[in-house]
Length: 63
Image (tube, rainbow, N blue to C red):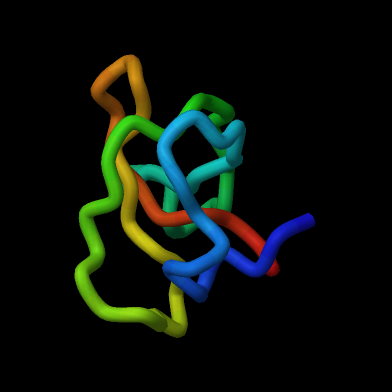
């Protein structure tokens, strides 16, 4: 599994698992394809925030 805390590891078209805002307490993941990277910094301790092709927004799960 990729380390989703580093922006360099994420690119459009990549299949990922994200944690939606509403699922942060449970850690439930949602699978999808990256459309846009929303985090501008090179590193984020909770995961890079992305928008999936279906429009859902969340942070990349795991590392």
